[in-house]
Length: 460
Image (tube, rainbow, N blue to C red):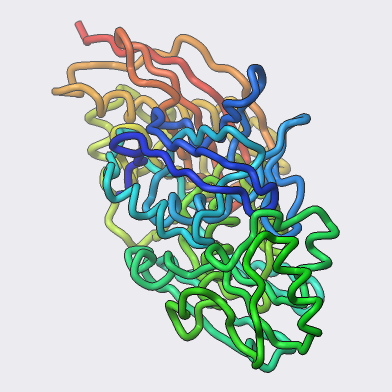
C-alpha cells in the first residue's frame, strides 16, 4: 500500500535575516489540505502572491534556488524544502514577508526542530511517488547527477574542490529517518576568496560567521580581509593560517559534503513527489540539481502519472471470479482480468489484450487495433470497482457513469499488449457521486486517459 499524504499538526514561525538580501524576515509554515502541495505565499504582496514550490517555477540558481511566478520571486528555499521533504510534509503553506527565506544558521536544523514540535498529521489521499524506472543522467562540466532504479530512497554525494582545506569529500543517506541526525545540522559554506565577487553580484549581503562555514584556503592581504569583514558587517579577524574561520567548530568532519546532500534534497523536493530510487551526485550545485528536477517534472507532466509497477507472478487482490461478483458484465463485455492494487482513493486493474478478442474480427481485422471506446469502457469498469469499494456489501450496488470528459488516445493498443489501468478519485464521494481520473498504460507508456463522473445506485 502506498503511504498517505501528510501535513503539519500546527503552524510555526522562524525569524532571521536573508542571506542575500540582508532583510529581517519572518516565515510561517502552516497546514494545508490534501492535494495542495507545498505553496509559498508572499504576504508582503496583496495580489497574485502564490508560487507553487515546483521545479518548473525555478527562475535562478546562483548561490541558491529562486522560485518565481510573473514578477514575484522567492529565493533560498532549499533548506526549508529539504526539511519538509525529509519529514514527509506533502502539503503546507509557507507565508513569507520578503523575497527570500531566512538563512537562520545555514542549515535545516531549526525547520526540523519546529516540525517535530508541531508534529505531522496523516491525511486521506495517497502520497504521490516518483518511482525511478530507468537510468537517468544530467551532466554539466564536472558536475553529474544520476538516478537509478531502487526499491527505496537513497543518495550518495561526492564533492571535489581545488583547495588545500576542502578537497574530496563524500556523504550518503540511505534512510530519510536519519536526516535529522546525520544531515539537518550541516551548514552552507563559502570560500573567503569568493566573498568579494559575490558581493559585487549583489549576493550574500546577510552573510556572517554564524550562518555559513567560511573557508580560508588562499592567502589574501590582511587589508583585503579587513575590507571584506567591514563590508559584511562582522568584526575584523586576524587570519594567520588556512582553515575554517567560524565562531563554531565543524559539526561533522565532512560537513560541506553533507550540506551539498541537503541542498540536493531541497532542490529535488521541488518535483512535488516522494522519490523511490537512488541518487548519485558528483560535484552537484543548484543549477544541475534543478536541471534534473525540471527533467523529472517534464516527464511527470507528459505522462501525468507513472505507470504502476506490475509483477505478473504476484497474486492479484481480485481475480476474474471476484470481479464477476462485483460487476454485472459478462463475455464478451467483461474487460477487466484482475485488480492488483486497491485503496480508498486509487485502484490499479489489468486487461490482457488477446488476438482472440471478438472485436478484432471487425475492427481493422488486417491490422488489429483495440477500439478506443473499449479502452475507455475497460477503464470505467475498473473505476466502478473503486467506487463500489466505498460501500458495505458492494455486491448489492451498481455503478452508472453519468459523464466522461477529456478523453485522449495517445498510442495504439494491439494484441499481446497488457493494459494497466490506474484510476484515482478527484474528490470525496458526495451524495453517491464520484469523480475520477483514469490513465491507461502499456508498459511505461501512457496510451489513454479520461475523466469520469459515476453514481452508485442500489440494485433492485
